[in-house]
Length: 160
Length: 390
Image (cartoon, rainbow over all chains, first blue to last red):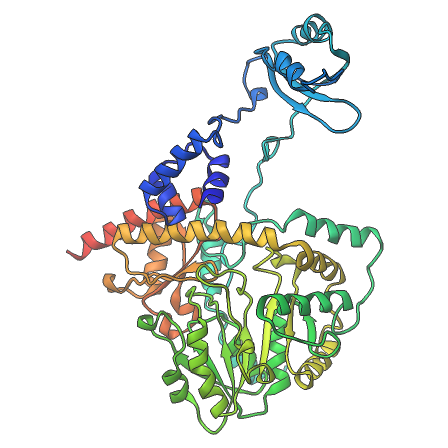
């Protein structure tokens, strides 16, 4: 039940519990208990909304920043990651395998705002060796959802 | 000029679904619950394999009975799901959809006058295929109170000394009924006692919502008298690829292959390459789609019970088959009015046999949002009909 519940609400966190109960064939009270547990255990970390900001008048700039750092003795990457993720403009911080160490995604109002974060704040951290900033030009798909196209039902309307 | 047509083909009624199709197609904004195919696209990795095969220039014929790789995968699939062992070289034929397999199986097995038992309601092609093959269709009218399963008594009653073949269409289109192992065991005894063959159409085998589907071929003594038909259309959402298969005793398969060789040559090559990928790496996709169908199925059952509409719980395919006898109208009248007044298309149960009278086939191969809108219309319509009756 847990895995199915999670996969449903991962796609639709607004679904109400009575509908979930119908779709899953599980009593409402069991679902409510399970959701509570999942929240307490930190499995469910939040209920977010996927927004295509492109379609609004709000100006936003997203960037992905590759960061190479020097790991610190006894701490590895954790303390440098913490220094970075505490900035509110930082959306996500991942430790990455391959040619660099941390992938930082950041959201700003303008190119300038993002660049100044990189040059003033990120690059000046002692353990940061180098950064490479990639600005997002267009989002085609985000969180498993295709943002650019809607597909119509082209099937014949009645078939045996 | 002489009559260009054969009497036999004149005598065959066109599919009952045809009439509805024409009406619905003229209505632009109709909400349809009438399709018999998945709403999902074929999983991308399967499509990609088809595209790749075209890029590689694999645009040739395959051998008549199908690509060796595919036949091997089909045998692997039947081994892992039903513990059935087939020889890929002799016991398998890849066909143009399950429909072709039905046609050529009947043509390979029937002599004039041989009787074929066809339980109804069921898919529209068994009866005409049987007639075209020279056989005599004998209809078994399944009952709502048995959840449209075939019982040993019903089977026994329909058998004569001319009966040769039983069509076993489960999981069923249009009722959504399934036959569980215990049901199959009961009819197995009758089948063996009367030395019948079985054409088991298991095209919806992957879409069951109770226990896993059991093939009648997996029961003792049944593999040698069963032609098992399956395909890729429903499980992998591959209807347009036109690909199915039949497995069974090599003496029957080889004759089916002969017909196939002269009429079709071979199933589409691109589709066959894509199907290899489907069988090798498609289990997770099937599970995901099955789960989505199951949620919709539960939603519809709930919606009907809220409306007070009688409907047995179907555990297979992607259809529900609610009963509309309380309204005192025929299925056709109900479906026609429902379409005209609420612009929702459902298929009258009678399109699948006379005993479908009083029922509707509602497909849940639609998004949940779509089904919710349709059920609002249905609720309003049902309430209106009840008010009219008072």
